[in-house]
Length: 64
Image (cartoon, rainbow, N blue to C red; front, side, top):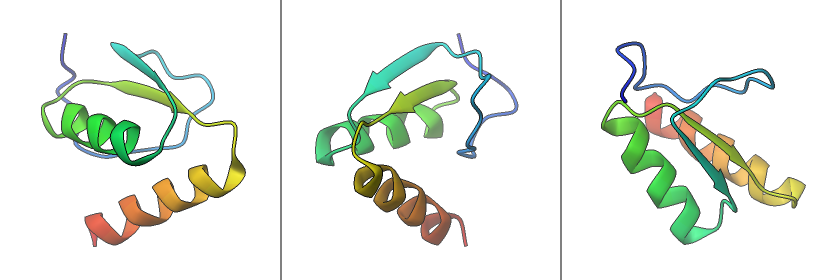
């Protein structure tokens, strides 16, 4: 189920994933990051632009 290329979070509108998450609040964000850390390819969505920006901003800071 994992992906050898994972470990990074990327914005991609045509992604094929093992897991889908709707909602990037505290619980959704932690779940997505944990799955990615374990090699699972995840597609995530949140209807609130602020939540998406906060998520991707935190991921960028985490990877640096």
